[in-house]
Image 1 (cartoon, rainbow, N blue to C red):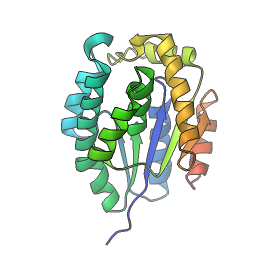
Image 2 (spheres, rainbow, N blue to C red):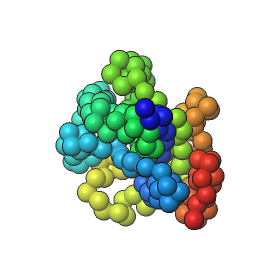
Image 3 (spheres, one colour):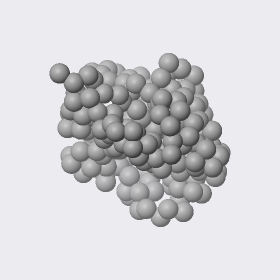
Image 4 (cartoon, helix red, strand yellow):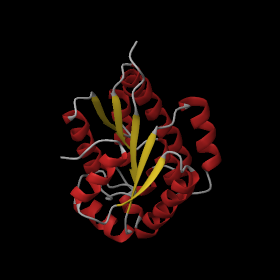
Length: 208
């Protein structure tokens, strides 16, 4: 039986460089010979990708925070069943661009006082935490400008504006303090290669 793999997640405000750093870490670990599954939330499985479009496209007022929590939890459950748990069971490293911490911050704090609902659903439906979480931290105005400049069509949360992004940053920083055993706060206002090298070192790897 394969030893259980490692579950690593990347969190942070929109435009902080999570996706880039998740890809770089995956490349580094693959170069070292390990099996790596690079995935994302919302999404990461066929069903969850369908739900993703409902969440990240359209006007900001499309859903209430409570409805978002239910949609994110449904997508996460499918992602967990179809992608994350099977990969961990065969000993792979799973690297996910966002997981439950994003719901704790986006819907549980920045959009209202709904952390209790988020935690209750997580405990009953998800029940899994990452082994290691990197929280990429940077100025919310700079991060927002970067995120909007992508013009990805998935700008629903960026369109909540700068005040929302500032609340998100505060929420993620508070989360790093709440879970110091698994969360590492990373200064993301630095050159991409420098950030990648720090993350690789914290993972026990060496960036190329």
